[in-house]
Amino acid sequence: MKMELKNGGTNCQLLSKIATNNEHGENSPYFDGWKAYDNNPFHTTKNPNGVIQMGLAENQLSSELVEKWTKNNPKSSICSPEGIDAFKDMAIFQDYHGLPEFRNAVAKFMGKSRGGKVKFDPERIVMAGGATGANELLMFCLADPKDAFLIPTPYYPGFDRDLKWRTHVQLLPIVCESSNKFRITKEALEEAYMNAQKAKIKVKGLIITNPSNPLGTTMDKATLTALVTFINKKQIHLVCDEVYAGTVHSPNFTSISEVVQDMEDHCNHELIHVVYSLSKDMGLPGFRVGIVYSYNDTVVNIGRKMSSFGLVSSQTQHLLASMLSDEGFIDELILESKRRLASRHDLFTKGLEQVGIRCLESNAGLFCWMDLRTLLEEPTFEEEMKLWRVIINDVKLNVSPGSSFHCHEPGWFRVCFANMDDLTMEVALRRIRMFVEKGKEDSTEVIIVRKEKKAWQRRLGRLSLSTLMYDENILTTSQFSSPHMMSPHSPLVLART
Ligand SMILES: Cc1ncc(COP(=O)(O)O)c(C=O)c1O
Image (cartoon, rainbow, N blue to C red; front, side, top):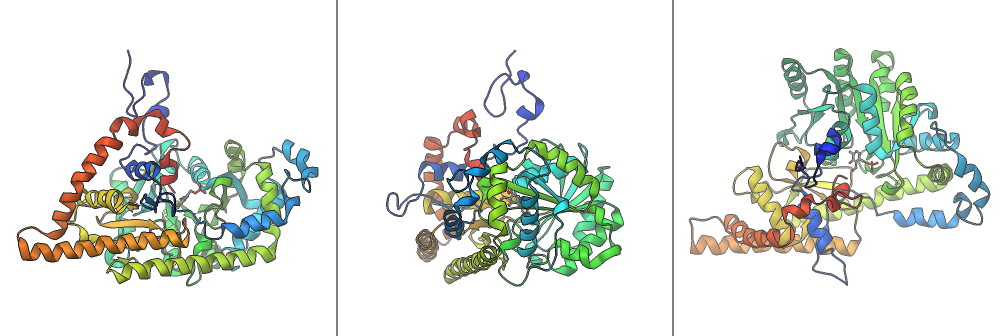
């Protein structure tokens, strides 16, 4: 008997449950924006009316500095005449501990990207395929199927895949609210823990992202200390995803490692684990360099063995060992990258403010958390989706709706600003300005002509007509579910960043 696969394939009986359970989360309607972008990508000269990609948390603002270093240091590449002598050694290297010079250089870089306030031990570094692989590896080490990790909302959508899909670990939300700038509260934390206990779910830990994706905010030392105290009391793990550590532009960043160092014997270090990668701070997501830094010797030991499934290639280790050891270059890169990110952040948020759009106050990350609650006719997720479709199809900006980050309040959107050049940013701001101004015009018109219907409702209603046509013509369900969409080039792979 043939069985229809939820993702559009057939004969799932031949495949495993993991292969057919759709729990990777990549079949969500949030494909729409990516598909719209893929079908009509913006280009300043070749396609100026295309969709601008603002759903991609990529740091491209300092790429040319890394490129320049690579060009000026050909000996670091085993594929250049200057570096070919190391080719054979690298080609046969397959040790899951990693090249010692690579681990040393990464440990040093982790210290530098956290403001030099804490030292990292190269012996505690475990390699993984990006932070994606690092997060999953940690789940395999710390939890069994059905065990749970608590997680503050809103959170990075990729966690549903990275932490849950293959491990069968559960994520239980700690609800954070806009009324206190989405900060985690003791009450919400205790409530999430209690709810799990009532449901007889074994909580193995708490996972936080600091700096936060999607908020772009950082946790202060007092909050981090309170979290360490909490997990100590409950004897559960604390996983800190710090992939955005080097994007903090003001004030200085406090890493969990600093807190652990300061608390000395007042916390059980074996419960603390840091996830890091070079994807965001160095702008190298394609290199797939992920790190688990655990204060637990057994996790380091087992993690190294598990890392066989997702090692960083020796060629990449070789190049990066050399680049990260060039301290003069790295110090300059970290400073310049922060300067460029801060300047882009200011340009973007000030541009939004000029048309009355506010973002959550933030000091890190490659994105802003934009507040469009006043543009919703009703505070519902249906209205959020409606507005989102207008933004993609009419304004032609691919931003990400808050619901995809498990936000509990409708009307928030994540907008990425570091994956484009200045000109594209200007066009994006101009489009937002025009959209808001048109909305205001409609509003005045409507008050005069027909008082009973609100402007935004009319606007959304009218625009959603074209959205429907767009959906029918371009974004049919079968396209979403075609196996082609699940290729490594699937926009959702990117959408998860
Ligand atoms: C919080 C967070 N963790 C992990 C990742 C995955 O990063 P990597 O590309 O290193 O796998 C991302 C990517 O966006 C992220 O935002």
